[in-house]
Image 1 (tube, rainbow, N blue to C red):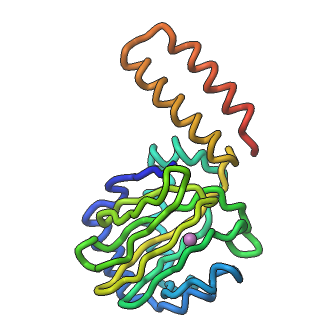
Image 2: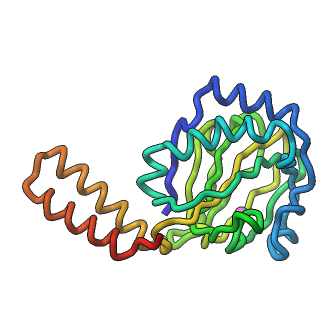
Image 3: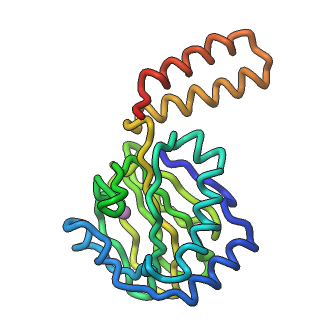
Length: 222
Ligand code: NI
């Protein structure tokens, strides 16, 4: 299940983030990749020791972790410190699956969910689509600046080569209270049904609420 979060960042927040990123020190992205992923990875990443890193997180991560759609679809237990990646002309990230464990050795988590926040406007670069393969086939994603996409870390994906301009994104990973993507999807569908029933003031709402709560309890791991 791919979930988009439109307008996670406002225009003002994007301007602030992009102006901070312009001052940042970027290093070879292979340094942060696992053995398998590093073979396919050709990009740059903001040095997490850079003085701009905390200021970026204050905007991007603060917005993300408070967003209702993130909370309702990811069921987050823990979230990773993000990566800010830059792709300039000729850079790409070939087909890969994200590492099963992410984060520093002191803050390691299981990656259940991957998140990409688009920081560049689509018209500022050519190519650079995030292509995700799931049971529905392949989807190419290139969202407006400030929008985000949430997808299962179990899915095979790549970033197409950037053929002109510059692509900036923020990436992070979530360990979910509900480990399996198919179970999360059922809960999301049931939650949509609850909203609809509530809007219709339907008498079935109480039963569906009970089913939702008990399924969540059955599948949640803390
Ligand atoms: Ni990836």
